Amino acid sequence: MSRTFARLLLVLIPAYFVASLALAHDQASWILRGGLKNAAGEWCCGEGDCFAVPSEQVSVSNAGYRLYGLETVPFNEAQPSPDGVYWRCKRPDGTRRCFFAPPSSY
Image (tube, rainbow, N blue to C red; front, side, top):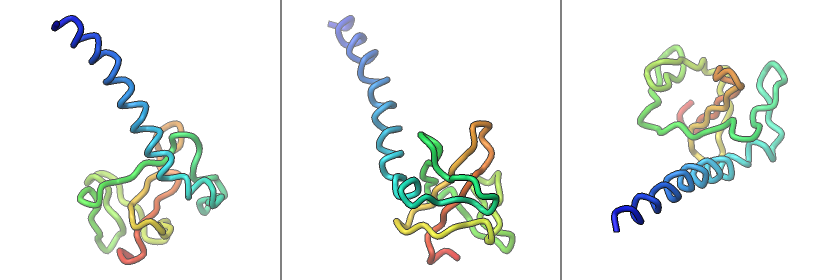
């Protein structure tokens, strides 16, 4: 019985992660559909580039939005998020390409 359970976990756990990545990209599809770009003219969203940032991981200061206590996004680099969620889009090297904030947080 435990061998069957272990095999089931080996199938279900990777499937969960693939499904959650697909769901996150579907939720961010408005970024891709909108053809949104940053100030440098780069497209914000490619496959798997954008992810939601939990609002409890965002604080607002005079300098801008502080993400995870590690990165500050200046207000002038933030774009409005029509779905009311914070979004961060990244380049392949992990640096920020675009950031979206709910309009009420400006």
